[in-house]
Length: 445
Figure 1 (cartoon, helix red, strand yellow):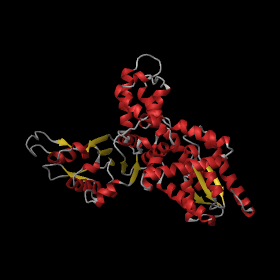
Figure 2 (tube, one colour):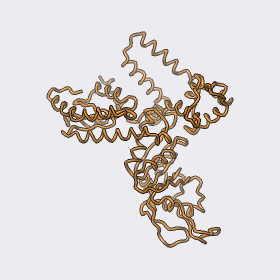
Figure 3 (cartoon, helix red, strand yellow):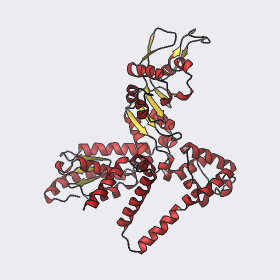
Figure 4 (tube, helix red, strand yellow):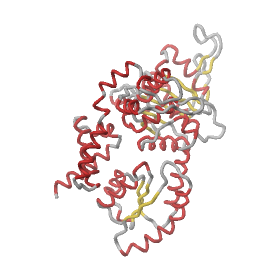
């Protein structure tokens, strides 16, 4: 996308500087999508369309502006909205480009490793980005992490993976505390530990979660459930790395990485006065949102097969009606809901043949009948596309029309809320904002 002749010499220099390493990354076997570079000196609709094509399937692409003045703030955000992973201005040195590609290649190799596959399963572009975020924050940092998302989206598994990837030398154990089970009257003992005789029944000293996590990772599940008094005590430990056992006057030290999970919107909880703002910012040095299963429907079948797999890793095939049922069914409990369904199906399945409709529990069969319209959406779409192709409509126009219809349907179903529509489509709010901006610009012409 180099349009000006005066920039061709500079473009050739950039290409020579980075081509060798780009080829090494490509030939490396890869990752979730080998890293690439696109050079440009003008941001227009043609470049944005090219970026959308290059970044399909989760491929990471870096945009490099030639010359530096070609990159404005609006242009950079537009390119990110179209799918680029990063945008930079060419400064005459290829080291910055090379370092980005090296980091991306390493993250992708880790994301495809057996260790990650044991914890997080999926192949959709939305899920790949989440896995990359988890890998990057786990492997390259030791900061506190806040994992947000609905129940059953895999927050605890992500927390376990962050601990496993953590590169701290001499790292100690992962300690898990479920904040929903903490009894207020015993909370001090649970977190801080206690001395012998500190209260009735304290017949021996006991280490709490802070002591057990020293040198390791403390995972607080559903941290949004902590009462305000406990939030204040947790803040003190996080800030100072010191605490006292119940019944003791001696300060003890504990240094741990804090990973928290919540199904609540902690920003809203802070505004409502139910969660301390200062603690929220301490917890959220890095924030990762775990998407609901409805936001990554492409992962349903691979998850289902994984849950059906035996000890040898082999899973029976799924017959076409069962596959359609699984894809059309709603999962209010997210991945945990799907896992429980596959457990029930697995109990009924006998032999080495495929899973058939008879293996589906009766309660799910009635549900399948109610979801019949959703099952057939692909067939309806196929008929519409066949008609468009037969009428000679170009591919780009078909893609644009499909995008327009999908976004309009999502916005209509979300009462115009960009956030809710983006969640349903599995895209960012920024993507829909840019879409609206392009629509207004087109109407103005």
